[in-house]
Length: 218
Image 1 (cartoon, helix red, strand yellow):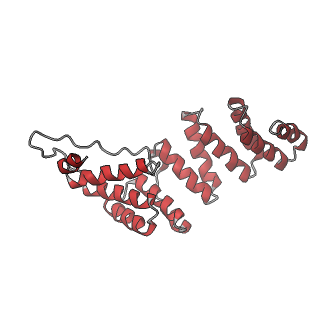
Image 2 (tube, rainbow, N blue to C red; image 1 turned 30 degrees about the vertical axis):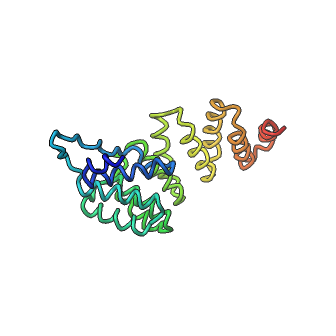
Image 3 (cartoon, one colour; image 1 turned 135 degrees about the horizontal axis):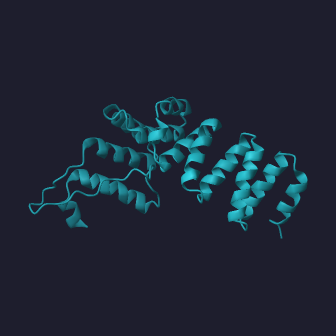
């Protein structure tokens, strides 16, 4: 390990150091779909052919600070990053998430107005949808969840998020449809069945809710 830190330049050390924080903390970066460039190849002379640019180093710094809950510092570095790279939408979404964590929901909502959703990958769309749900902007979150499910219909976690959100939006019929798809795939999942029963109750379908709840109890 000592030889590694001597061999690689400081910028690479920063990127790899942040990744070690993620691994040892049992966490992943805020945007898993945004790959960190591979460690540059080292030439025979020991000098890197490719340098890690300042903006990428700052991005990883902001992510590290956010994971460590040093939100004020993270927000400051995200804003410096976006001043240099104003069209880096993945960083905008990450900043919006950090603003939410720091209790600045209005600032996060304003930031998200600038995001072009069509250019985002599945992970970024999910993150954006989750932020919209926190803001109770369900109409904006729903198409994002559905887009991801079109690409990955077996993504049960995303389908559960959609089902729950639809129930909170009082779209009970649509919510029940998603719960039924989940139960078809996961018939032994007690918690999903109980949540399904709760939506039946909210929809006034008490007779249907009774056997569903009984199935979850000894």
